[in-house]
Image 1 (cartoon, rainbow, N blue to C red):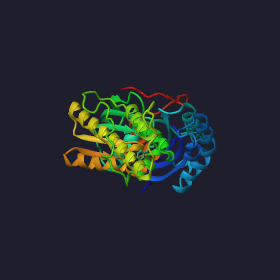
Image 2: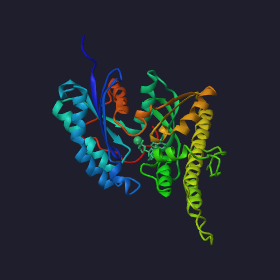
Image 3: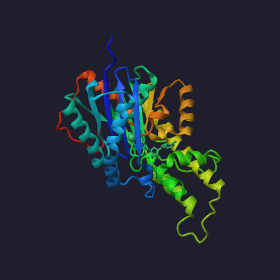
Length: 343
Ligand code: KG4
Ligand code: ZN
């Protein structure tokens, strides 16, 4: 019996350098992620130039580890894939250039994977079955986008944030509260001992018919709660551990409420019964609890597994969908930093 075919996937769209080997049954044989969190911590956000340079340093060790752990040689590969969009141009180029080189040396097809599609495909991997058609929500540090997905590779953008992405709001609020980067996990931890009803923060567009998000008003409201109202003669409130926890919990609640409300609206508008959610913020426990509640109302809810929420290469298993359809990229394919609006 021949062993299942394998694809090597490279992900370097933002600030994680990642590689994974996945077989044709979507079994993840290895998945390696080198994080750059420490490098960006002092800036409370990703610095593109630092990110690309770190990718150059990390990529070869990450690649060899992914191949070694899965006991894969170059000649065992059926294809090599790289995430080519969207992302930071310098970061994307590092991964794509490596993938092109490997494709040329090993004489195997190159596959260009869309990072957003891959985030949603993490739900398909978890489900172990086809989950489309479905409403898709990608909620991460760079995106808060709702899609109507016909299939893994065919979808339409329904709406997105008009300002900050949800994860970006987590990162900025965490910085304001003096917590670490990336902010999501820190806010979640601190919020555990907080009261989510302590502050009634704004929930933009929550009760209107638009499939759009806005988190800048929420961020400003948190800022005033932490630093005091601008122009006020009163001293800023003392940020005791309890007040910090209450702000974190109330903020988290506001984000989760809006995300859930807009998912429900999209399901209604598009007349869909299935929902799939991926991206870093999908790791948020409070949000996941609310999604469980939504599931109990009869919605077929698919959430990316925790290990595949934040950026990784294993979700690039979607490369197998390309492979089966013969969707290969030419060696002169370029990166596309911006978001692809619709298909
Ligand atoms: O998907 P991802 O790794 O990168 C992008 O494609 O942007 O998402 C990173 C984002 C960060 O903004 C981070 O704060 C957020 O996901 N995040 C979380 C949690 N874990 C990561 N946000 C809320 N709760 C979490 N547990
Ligand atoms: Zn991502």
